[in-house]
Length: 271
Image (cartoon, rainbow, N blue to C red; front, side, top):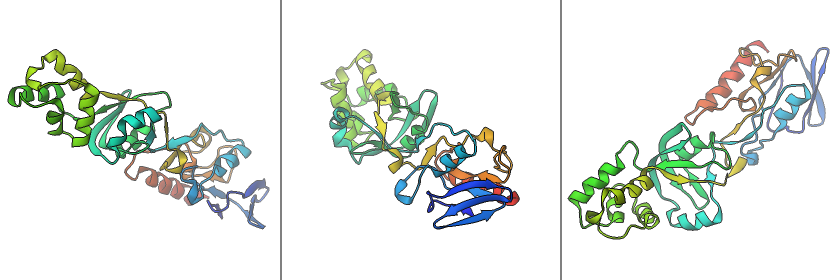
């Protein structure tokens, strides 16, 4: 019961009366059942290809749109220039896209944004969309600023923010806010844009780093064409697709490994 692997992306398969005939290297292998566990397109330097999708289509299975997932996001040159001083800075943050949000570490890079929070949201983000960044997770930004106005009236905005954020990030935010003067002189109306900048910073990536660094491939072989218990193709007895090749994607934290192992086990019990 051979499995087609990442190392044989050029293999060709066809259905025969006894099962399947698979061209592997220079010879053919026949089998009663065929489990395809070749993954998706992520990290091609490890041998990843779209082989499973081509094979699925060959046998009449539907394949949904594929794109990189759990991947760093990138900015255009102008935004990169604006944020270049932040490369290497990491901080706790809540990243939101619509109603979806994740609270984890955010990392600024020389290409854009990374870190667990960004990898998570990348599976929901699409080109043309913006994301919202809350740099003071579950804190009242306006309340902190009002308290600072009372307790540290002679401090500037950058100094106040540096008490809660990495210094380079606080400095850049102060420049973006462009509100000179001591915080003791700020009215609530003048403080509000500062609070908004810190808790609802809107950023618009232009793309991602692609399959080169993506941890998973979103999309793939449509689950409607597979038996949910055995992973066998409904219209091709004996043909199974498992793991990342299938249109199932989880969050960070081992969920995708678990899916690969569980789906492979399910197929292996009956193939």
